[in-house]
Image 1 (tube, rainbow, N blue to C red):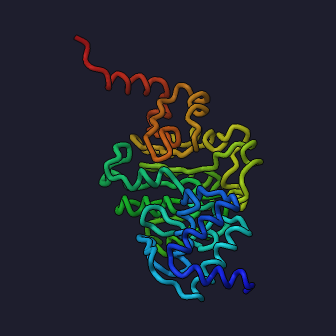
Image 2: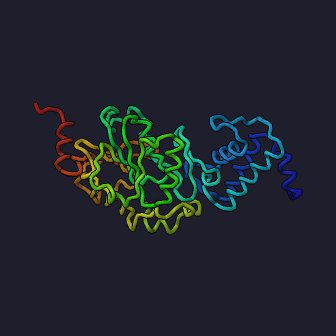
Image 3: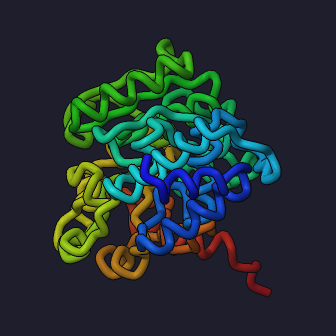
Length: 316
């Protein structure tokens, strides 16, 4: 340890000082956030608590920290700055709500507006708990949405697919850790290709949706994630096209499709003007997730007209 580093560690004797120091370092280094943590202070707090093996649900700013523990925190800060990897890759964990998931560089770091909707028991567009027997998480990645589906619908069987065998290996870790091996089946599949005769009451998907031009300008943190899980062609809708083309034949009558597509509402509605998309409000706005039923997909404009008619007051 250099003389400067030794002096710095002496001054950083409590949690609050470490968090402030980390925030300052991250801001000066111009790190990019957005992998479940949105700013320098929150990321410094998370890494501090993780390195000190403290609970994440509170931040004890005045808690004293021993010199050896301070050194461990600073080492993690330095690694974050040097490698420009999302914090989740350094700690091998990511959180959706109160659920913890294992992650590494074989999968993108879980972040999903669909997860928000699954946590909301009052959300009106998901099938009722007793009416859902089979669900699909398409492009499952780390398996996080499949796990959340299984925990919300405790009588349902869940299929989870991905084209990446590496991703499925990570998903398997999460399925095992959440003790859901009997209810979640992981399948290697290019979208619906391996699901020929399977039908579901609910399909959710957080597929690739980054445009080619954006892929070329991504910050280093995002370039450390698998490009296969991000890139979706020139307009970012390559995956959405496949899903909208194939989903209806894999939904039961009354079945629901929920797809996350980034902030792409305008592009989606221009590309499919006759489909009656529903765009629920999320923490990211009302342009991130769309919902369609099987009947919407099959009948397009007719379904939209019927929906409008049902919502209109009776003629006098």
